[in-house]
Image 1 (cartoon, rainbow, N blue to C red):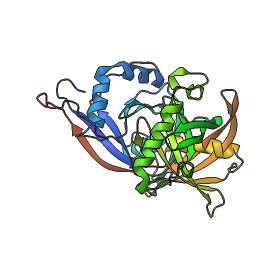
Image 2: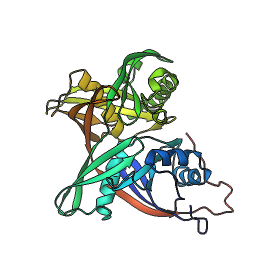
Image 3: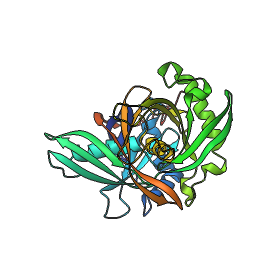
Image 4: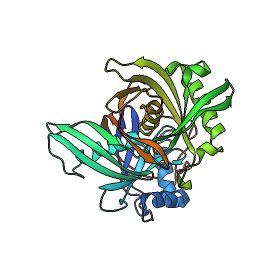
Length: 341
């Protein structure tokens, strides 16, 4: 935050209903030579985290707010870097944020784009380098598909004891580690009517697994931790021939993704590919709890971290919802705000 004025400027987007607040001015210097190092710096810096809290907490934000700090890329091969944040800290990956940033970069001219056709926006995130392919027509962004880091399965059918009985979780990586559980196995469906129960069971699954061996990244402990629990409904096949699923991702500590979750969709694609349900060229129709949709594709089979993996592409759309300049009155007894869940 600018110590003289206290002003922090943002541009807000939503991707499939999930907010993404882009900080465009007023954040402190964030040290480090890579985005992953800058994430570590932010995690240990009260000055930086004060800005996160200001923007995510009420009354300026809410318990399900999400956003990012723009930072320099790791090298000249990317257009910029980003540190993703939420109510509990800093994530390693964010697909819906990558889609929003692709749209923002083209809309603002940060990355030059022709009025018609595709433009690549290359972004360094803590888990690696992703590319948002922004498709425009008539000078307007129509959709964005981001190519993620390699995604892979970590473990299958891990038993998890919950208040609704023991369930089976698949652990997979899509820039962050996710645990997938079929919602029907806990007597629920992915629907707004079950929202409180879905949050509760998602938190149980995440925290039950977070201290276990499946929560360890195979090569970099800075990427450790079960980031979210994906509760899903399997809806069979869509008319195009690929799987059709609906999910809600409960991440951080009880935060709910309104979108189908971009990096979580990559993690789901790794599971579906291993099951033989999704081949190269086929599409997963992935719906959210509010009825919005991402389209997920496996574009290549590769090896990563000594195991079979897939490269994925997740397509969605993002829209600007507003701009703002926030400040903190030094006499405000609420300080950087509060959260109610």
